Image (cartoon, rainbow, N blue to C red; front, side):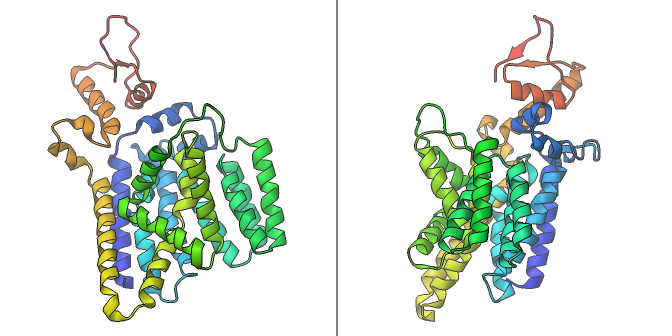
Length: 369
């Protein structure tokens, strides 16, 4: 991928994320977090409150972090490729992942965690141990499930016999388990493997996830394993094991898994380079198919709104829960009604964001969706 084409892509990509962040109505989870969250995530949500007069009031920090992740990923990827063109390609694939797009425009802590993980890996390559410790401390404060990351770093440093990093990571593992929430592994055993698998497919897009899984497995069997692989593989395996007995919170694991998408590009290049040109054709065709599926997935997310016009049943649209309360608020504004009652607390908070309070009168109609 050429430099000019990459920068043109980044320009349109930035505009697309901005468009999504401004035009997408507040979601059910976003509304719940906006009014009820008391964790550090609340600080991010209300950081730019009142600055823009639209949904950027609560999405701006996440959009900014999502855009920052692009140059950070590019810097990190240069450790894996000699040619900048390969880094441009890997960064483009990273930016187009559905999970990366949605994390940049919807309130969630994962996008901030991705930023910190990328910074950590860059600092690790520069052998900045003190600053790595600072980033680990920030992760501990920001992410309840950061113990996943510390365990991965501890395993990596143990294999590499890096005593200093191992000591720091073990200390953070202990602090994370003893004094912070950490991972929720309680409750009645309940298999959720297929649900988790579906979430990973949605996070990467189907074909990209299958190739990503293959890349992790191939590296495990025969390739050199670096800290990025240990972080991603440990988080992925832990999520699989936990899904066999309980529901897994995707934001606990996804930030540590998705950053390793660069390894997928590395694996592809290694596969191509060891084969003669006449035997590369099939792999190149497969690459184009995978990349095309990724572009299609990202385009569906960015231009999701027109899909409503092609659906007879709008409830089948994946973004319906974002738009329905907004449409209700518009209808109520037309008839001059400023209250409405629904059964779902999340939907009620969505309506509240648009100035529609819960009705107190008993005879006011309710909907139960």
